[in-house]
Each structure stands twice: as structure tokens, then as C-alpha cells.
Image (cartoon, rainbow, N blue to C red; front, side):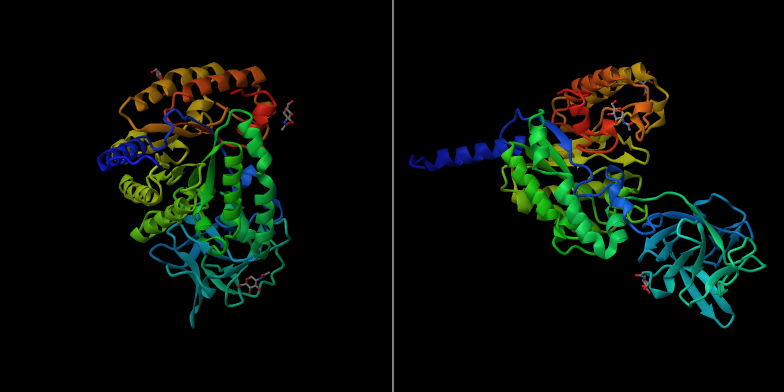
Length: 517
Ligand SMILES: *[C@@H]1O[C@H](CO)[C@@H](O)[C@H](O)[C@H]1NC(C)=O
Ligand SMILES: *[C@@H]1O[C@H](CO)[C@@H](O)[C@H](O)[C@H]1NC(C)=O
Ligand SMILES: *[C@@H]1O[C@H](CO)[C@@H](O)[C@H](O)[C@H]1NC(C)=O
């Protein structure tokens, strides 16, 4: 700069530009996010790419799978005894106490996690070998082998670490002392029927399921699922931003803790280069925090327990991930915002813990960038029900350059299934519109609709053509959504770019004329 300003002028000018930056985040106050999520790319969600699951051996026994185990001979289910007692039979059929959540070691060896987070373990003494709940980290004496009658069968034997199989005796006690030579018949006390309940299809399941083949499978996925052409496609169809879900282990690339594998950071680098090339912005979205902030595979939960935010150390580890990602991309012209956590699940994640983390996460972003927006997602309840996002307003008002993410889906919840097409449109124009107007008053924090999709009511996701809605219905609904969601002060992002369920795939919706921006 050749003009020498007076010190005072210079100071005023720096002060003023700081104010603008801090008050508005980005320099361009007219920018409005019209985004698409890159779901299922750097953070696996199996339903978005089912072929990722297909190649896993024993794929019905991935991490987290809920099993109930019925003794074929006794016709009753196994249940950990009360008061820390031994595994025994029960007359109950559907209590959560009957659920064993698998922790997979390899395709045949597992730990069994119980409803109270303890693990099934072997206890041997002169009086016999029993199975008891233990609270320590699972090790060798908590490792059981599942042997199927044949590879498609749900009829199994369970081999304990002492080399013997579990069996049920006449008194209904379970002992680990069968040779497993009873012939698989209905009167064989060592045979159990697995009743498979909930299953998980996230990145933990996929990488742990493939084991040593995971690096190859994941590299192939990162290189092919999203490419430069997708950025070209999005930018030429009116999209100016991508929201990219990532998992916490990306901060440890190239050597993340097992079972995760390295390489996704390189893919994120690529996304930033492509975004710059096509004039787009990037929102980095921490979708999976250590310990899992939702009870689902969406946050890479291993077994459906929400264990994020329970200790200060865990919160600090999460802040470190935000710190790492912001430091890496703070100077990149395409970095628009860092979203601190996706869909924290109430009541497991309390408002108090969440605010503590959001404040620390915000400071971590500001350490590296005065301009990147910091997005704080509002809490959700199980079943996709949002908690009132205004609970975060006082905090967001304090943290300049922050925005609040709310997700609007009109599927999944029973209330929408009961409504017909017109009622669903009315809901959008009246209820959602009223709700949004309440949120977007002048002195309120900025509102981001970080996820939505043009699907409503009863949606048969697997067979969209059975849902009896016409292309005209979709066009009308999509237009209404864009009108209503378009009011969100920060902007919006469609869920998701690619997906086998046509109406949740932005690419499909655009290419087939169902949605026009
Ligand atoms: C699975 O793990 C068990 C226990 O660590 C080990 O003994 C066994 O050899 C492994 N099996 C396979 C197929 O890798
Ligand atoms: C939508 O708003 C109308 C009018 O305020 C109200 O009567 C109705 O109960 C609301 N519907 C739902 C599902 O909340
Ligand atoms: C549904 O119909 C569309 C348009 O006719 C077609 O392209 C698509 O393959 C069909 N999807 C299924 C799952 O049958």
C-alpha cells in the first residue's frame, strides 16, 4: 500500500472492518446459502450406498445389531439375571433387557453388550461355568463365537472363551459346558434362535466389517461417489454451497483409530479445490462426534448408545477436531462455515453440555478465522422431532457470526403420514411458515435449514413409484418448499446430492425435472 494513512485513521479503519467481519461473519452480507449436502460420502450411511454393505461377510452381524436369543428347546429368551446375576431364561419376550448389542471382533467373534452397558462375560469356578454381566472393558473372557447352522441360518450355537458352548439346563440356568454335539435338533439345549432387531449401517459397521479390506473399499468409495463433475453439475444448477458431513476421526488422518481408515482428509481437500474452481462455498459439518451424539449410524454410533458429551475430556476432544479442521481450511477462500455438531439427540445430550461445547467450539473456530460462520444445530428428539431451537438463541446472540441449523422433514413422523397431499402443502404454508416467521425476527440469530428434501407424508422410499404422487405434485411441493425455506436468513441445503431413493436425491430430482431452482 503506498498511501500513508494517519495512525488514527488506520486504527479506525481496522476497527471498522473488524466490526463488519465479526458482526456479519463473511464480507458479503447478501450471500444466501443455496446448498446441497454431500451425504454418505466422507461419512458412510449405508442406506445412501447399499453396495458398501453387500461385500461384508456375515453382514447380518455387524456392530450394534440387536439380538434376542431364544433357547430352541425351552422356547424362552435369555436374559441377564437381576442384581448383577447370571444369564438365565425368562418368560418375557420384548423387554429391552433381552437385547444383546453386538460388538464385532471379526466375522465370527463378538462381545455382547447388555441394556445396562455391561458386557456378557464368562465366570468359571469349581461349581461350574456361568455367564455374568461385567462392567470392565471387554477382553478375552468376554469374547464369544457365534456359529451358524449354515450361513443363511438364524439358528446358532455360542462358544464361550473356555472352548465350550452355552446350553440351558433343566432348571433354566445357562452354563458354558456343552460340547456342541447335539445335532442342531429342537431338543438340543445348546441351540438358540437369533431374533435380529435393529441394525446399523454407518462407517463404524462398514470399516470394522471389512477389516483389512476396509482401506481399499473406502478409497474406492471416496474416489468415485463424489467427483469434480458433481460440483460442475451443482454449480450449473443454481447451487452455491456444499454442506459436507464428516466424522471426528478425519482429524487423525492418515492414521485414525481402528476401525476407521485414513484418506478422507484428502477427499475433503479435493472438495475444497473443486468448490473454488466452480465458485462454490463449503460448510464443514461435524456429523459424527466421538462417542456419538445421536443413537444412530448417522453419527457413526457403534451400538446405539449416546455417549458423547458425558465427560469434559470428551467435549475437549471434539473441540480439538473443530480446531484441526478450521486451522486447515481457515485461509481457503471457499470455507464459509463450520457446523459444530449435527442433530444432537435429546434428552441424552443436555442443553447445558451442548452450550458448554458450542461455546468452546466457537472459540476454536475464532482462533483461526474471524470470518467463517459457526453453525450450531438445534437438538432433535428420537424420531426426528426437533426441540424448540430458540433454546439456543441467547447463546447465539452472544457469539457473533453464528447461525442456528434446523432440519425440516415432512416424512418419518406419524403426523405427516395422516395428512394427504394438500394437507401437507397447507402445513408447509401455514405451520412451517408461521414457525419460521417466529424464528427469523430482525434481532434473532440467523437461521439455516441445513437439511430438507422434497418428500412428504407416507413415502415409500424404496419404491417411490408406488406412492401415487405425480410429477406435478412434486413440482408443486418443491416450489412451495423453496418459497417457504427461502426465507431462512442464512439459507438452506437439500438432503442429499445422491441417494438410491429418487426423491431424496437432488441430482435425480433436477435431472428428471421434479425440482427447479
Ligand atoms: C477372530 O478373532 C478371534 C479372537 O480374536 C481369533 O481367534 C480368530 O482367529 C479370528 N478369526 C478370523 C476368521 O479372523
Ligand atoms: C397447524 O396449524 C394449525 C393452525 O394454527 C393448527 O390448527 C394445527 O393443529 C397445526 N397442525 C399441526 C400438525 O401442528
Ligand atoms: C420410477 O419411475 C421413474 C420414471 O418413470 C423411473 O425412471 C424409475 O426407474 C422408477 N423407479 C423405480 C424404483 O422403479
